[in-house]
Image 1 (cartoon, rainbow, N blue to C red):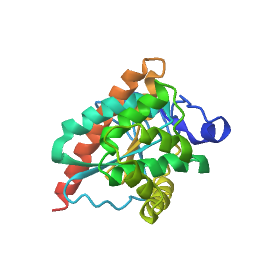
Image 2 (image 1 turned 180 degrees about the vertical axis):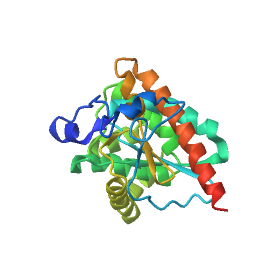
Image 3 (image 1 turned 90 degrees about the vertical axis):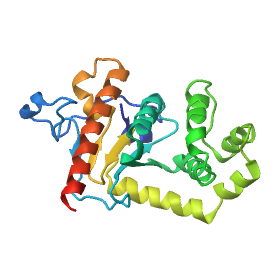
Image 4 (image 1 turned 180 degrees about the horizontal axis):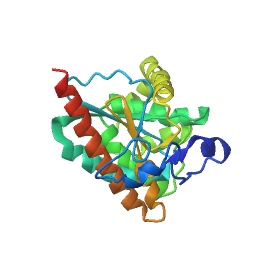
Length: 234
């Protein structure tokens, strides 16, 4: 499922609308095992540069306060681990409005400390299970200060650093370049986009886990497609 930008601006709550743009009658034959453009994934009009060498670059656009991002995180993490060295996995925290920026800074500070992978599940749990508020400078500092193994002073320095500010600006550029209108959104090879709500649009009445599984199948196919394209350029 995606968290739609419009819903962010209006309500600050998650939306669970299926992506239906570009669907045609021919998409009836589409399936996660046989993904079709316009039904299971979409293609950027202009491919974006990647720096993953011979590996396939996979980027997740996400937001800590999005319940669908939190729900997708365990399955996505397992999928990334399964891919091994075939891919380079990156994450980009989005900002559909200015109030999202503190969480972007939190991610980039933790990333610089090498703790993003370890802390992401804890942050999702704090927000979506424990119902903690972790989305302002003050509440983020309070949360981080209670986490064992996290140097709060170092985190604070990184959180307020020029480097983090630069990454936040870069995230805004990437969000615009990839035309991200909802999260979670997965970009593969700088060209292809999919998500549980896109790949699972035909099963919108099914459990969210099934839509997640569908998107992972599509991601498998797109990774293979990009790998083949890279191989053909050698």
